[in-house]
Image (cartoon, rainbow, N blue to C red; front, side, top):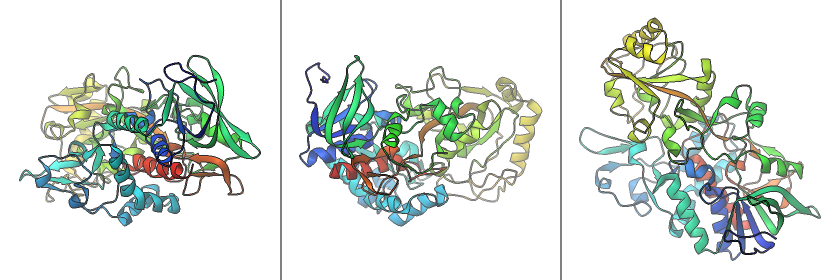
Length: 497
């Protein structure tokens, strides 16, 4: 017999079991509960470690919309709204961004659902009581006239970031009658006459049991917290990546689904990975700093490796379209370390939430050669890199971070936008490594989250959503699409389960 959070006996049979208490799992639970289903959500973490990867996010959620007027009834009031421009972001643009960043490897049917249902799903969650706002500090720059322009197709986020998102979800779930069982680790799927009929589990207190159900929704994340699986599926060296989010996403429930005949879906060889603080003492699964360990200001400066050389195009596109693939480029560098380098003017534009955090890995100096000595990089090499970069910039083009300005540094590799010379001290070097967020491979399903077998038929009683759903992303990812996919496909799965 399982027991609930307060130690009371729990029912051994329910209508729907949701495995995983992140954004996707809660969305599925809400949708099922709204249909009058008796829902239990099994969360591996204790109440102070719950929320999956969603807790560690900034809460950014990519939706299609018609511009500012289309968003005002969804977002928290802000005195800046009257002087803010939010460009419309159509489903067609959303779909094209998905195709562009994945190089066409995204599942077109899943993508169609994501882009067309992103705003309706967010409106649904807003109506249930989740709070949203415009993300000024992450997605807009102040213009000289004091107005604000949003960029990159990503404009809305949760009030309170990931922590606020999970707090809102938890409150709503309880209001809808969902029972949340913390400290419950799902271990296997129970089958009966060819259908999934429940979940086997263990608890933190050592109790083992089976929770029978008509439907099981898997929302337990990928395998990014499993070093062996990372090495096996992503390649050599990935065992050294830092885990940004929950330590619980070890792939166990992916394996449980495969064991009963589910088939893999999507790209198991790539993942979402970012530039991450290299030397902060607790730079994995940090519940206090969460997303503040990300270093997303690189389009404003340059990135060099330990040899003092640049190795990627910092200005290839807006950060939203490159940040999730550049972590792996850091991993490939000597020691899996690199440095984001800025001068005083560029430093002033960096997001405070990321670059002014306590204990940050940074060195500063009044000259580039002094900076090189402080970070242990060859002085001649770094000075030569900076000089070559500065001399190659087409200064006839105006520098503008709110658009892809085409201000190029004609070096190899080029910097295609936002090239500005590093010429005013003090200079800063922020040490970064690879932080892994989630893996792109998962289970194959139809567009309603029904898990498919080798014949392409749904496995009765089994659904998937969130990061366990394979097929949406490959190699790269447009920022905010993960939380959007979680709510869209979580809602779809819960509407059937």
